[in-house]
Length: 115
Length: 115
Picture 1: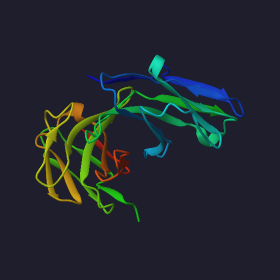
Picture 2: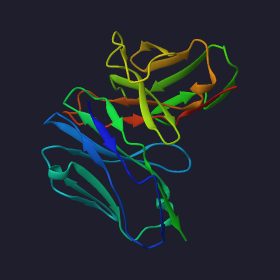
Picture 3: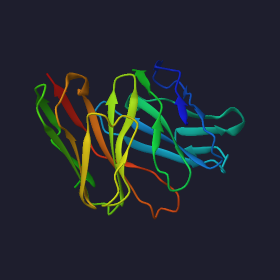
Picture 4: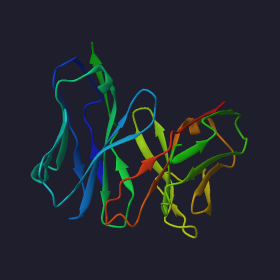
C-alpha cells in the first residue's frame, strides 16, 4: 500500500524567510508520480508540480523549488522569500503506476506567512 | 468558465436525508473522482470512474454511491446522511491520454453539513 507522510502539521514563518515543507512517501512500485497541491484559504486545490519516479532532477519555478530524493523517499518543497500569498495548506500526493491514477494524499501542512 | 464545476457549493441537511452532489466537467477527460476532505486527514478517495461504464470503490466508499451519467457528469449520493459525513467534498478529473502524466484537476468543492 502507498502512504504519504507530511509530518509538519503547521508552520509559521515571517515574510521573506525561506521555508521547506517535508514529504515522505512509501510505495512498492518502481514507477510512480509525486505531486504537490496548494489549497489557499478560498478552498480550491491548485496543482503545483508533478514528478515521475525516473526523474530525480530538482526543479525550480520562480520562488518555488522541489527536491526529489529516491534514496530517502522524500519530495520536499521549498519556498524562497516567502510572501503572505503563500499562506495555504499544502498537500503532497502519490500515484502508483501508469494508468492507475488514484492519488494518495498526505494530511497537509498549513503554512502561515506572518507579515 | 470553470472546467470542473460542482453543485451545490454549500449544503446543510438533516440526518437521514438523501442528498446528491453533482459534478460536471468540460475538460473532455475520461476519468472522474470523488474525494472528501476532513480537517487533519487530507483528502480521501470515495469513488472513481475511468469511463461511463466503470465504477470503482475508493478508500472510504461505505455510505456513499455514485452514478456516471455521461462522460462529463459524475454524481455522488448519500442515501441516508449522517453527521460524520459532514465534510468538504471534491470532484476531480484526469486525462488517460496524457501519456502517464496523471495530474488531476479539482472542482471548487462542496461543503456539506449534516445536522
